[in-house]
Length: 305
Image 1 (cartoon, rainbow, N blue to C red):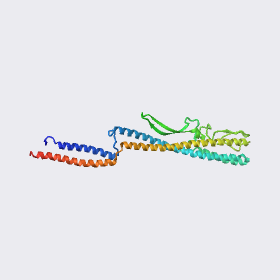
Image 2 (image 1 turned 180 degrees about the vertical axis):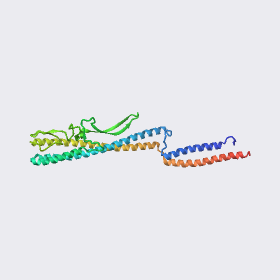
Image 3 (image 1 turned 60 degrees about the vertical axis):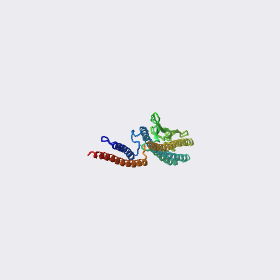
Image 4 (image 1 turned 45 degrees about the horizontal axis):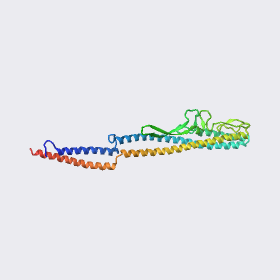
């Protein structure tokens, strides 16, 4: 029925156009942002999950940075520890040579030992980012080198973090606190005719009255230090391996979380492009339908002129 007061066809066409315009705005937003869930109003549940997981991934990024820094420190310490082992081996050789050498030759040998001891001081002070793990204070409150290795949040929201720890006493070459609790400055006593107290860092093969027992005690002290260095190197090697494995795991975990978030909120660009094209066609047809409806109303009015 044609009506002068109500153009039902035009109203229907206008409602259709409004609906199409709204759908186009949604589709264009998805194409421009790449997200089908960009705000809580799009899908409250998915938006909440994605927001939480993105926050967790920011924490994982911090963990990765910490692991990377720790890897550099541990690798530096391991390299220095390995070098120290070689230097102590050379000191052992010099002491063994001095055992049956003349006094004059022992003086020359001691000059070489002194140079090697100076090298040990340099090696033990090797640092990364201002931190030396091999020269530390045995009297300090900190007894471990610790690095955060994971960030975990349970279903209740409670957060826990994992750590990788290295006991400093196991890798301390020189005690910077003066307590001589390092591997190289721990003292031993020779029990021969030239009885004295010494360490790898202070032993002297030119002492008066040194006999076979004294030299054997020196060599025993050196062997103890070498065994402790080997133990320390093993601790550092194990820590380095674990740090590398954890860093790789956290990297893969972050990628997995990103993929999971994408599954929830990312827009399918092919689908959205096809939808936009269809909506553009629908919009054109809607405009034509509205034009026809208005034209029909004008025709009716012309009958009364």
